Amino acid sequence: MGRKHSQSAKAAPRSPVALAAGECHWKDQYSQAAWMVPILPGTKNMLNKRSAADAFQVRSVSKERFIQKIGVLETDRLNMILSAIQIVVGIG
Image (cartoon, rainbow, N blue to C red; front, side, top):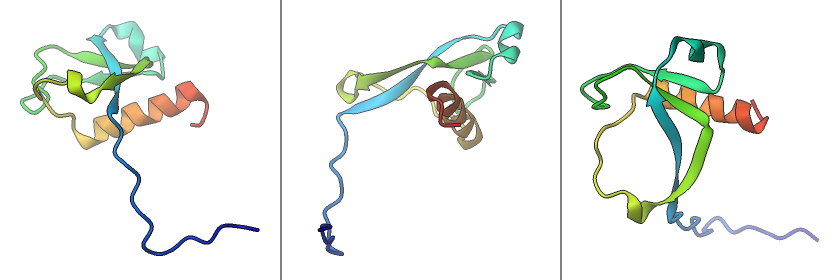
């Protein structure tokens, strides 16, 4: 028999870890790799050079290790990184 779910189900606890993708300086040959997402420098992300998020280098990092927020990615870039991660793990 299936379990019944009440409408007042508790929300899932927040994870103590965050996923972080590796970041490196952009190289033109990365444009051929679906897992490398270009990130242009900007005032919101605080990058000073064209960079890349490497979806092959995703790792779990304890949120306690994040000391200070330096910058923020634009939503379209974040969505591109999420799509690249899906490709890497075979669900995209």
